[in-house]
Length: 242
Image 1 (spheres, one colour):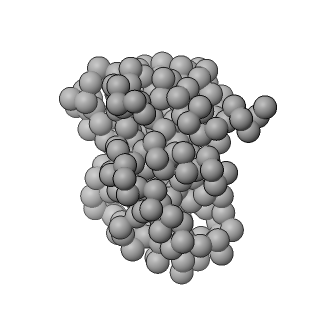
Image 2: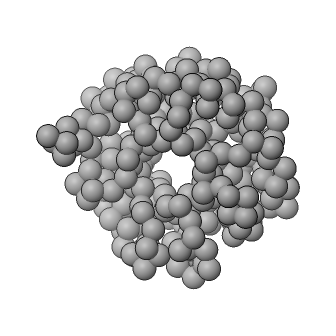
C-alpha cells in the first residue's frame, strides 16, 4: 500500500502545488490515485489555511474528495489543530461526515480518548508513533493496540544520512506484539531513504507533499501525483509486480 499525504500542516507559503481548498484537495487526490496511490491522508484547512478539525470543514472536504475517488480517505487529529484534549474530543464527536480513518499521535495528551471516540464511531484509527517520543512505550501498554487499523511508524529524523537507522530503531521499539499492519514513512530529507527501506522490508508506506517537497534527485516536486509515481519506482513496486 502506498498512501498519499496530500498537504499536512503545509500551506500556501510552501508553494502553489500544496492543495488547501476542498476542490484543490479533490483534484490532487484524483491525480494521486491515478498515479497509483491506494489510500489518501489529508489535513482539512480552515478558510485561513490552518489545520482544523471543524465538523463543517471536514464534511465539505470529505464530500468533495469522495465524489471523485473511491479509495479510503483519512484525516489528522493532530493536537496542533486543536490543542486542548477536551476540545479535540468534542470536535471528533461532532463530526457529521466521517472519514474512513484518522491518525492519532500516541504521544499527544488525550490520544487514548480520541482513539476510543473514533473507534466507537466506526472510524479506523492509524496509531501515529513518532520517533523520538514516548509514543511506542505508551502504545505498548495501550488496551487499544490490537484494535487500531494500523500503526504509522513516523520517522521524524529529517537527515538523509541517519533516517534509515532512526527508522530501524523505531521499528525495534514498536516490536510486533501489537499484531497490526505497519506503515513506515519519513519526512523531509529522510522521506526517500525511509520509503526505500519500507520497500525492502515489505511494509506499507506513504509519500506526498506533507512529507517532502522534493523528488529524490533534489528537484522540486510539482504535484502529489509526481511524488507517488516516483515512490512506486523507489519502493520497488514494478519489480514486485513483475
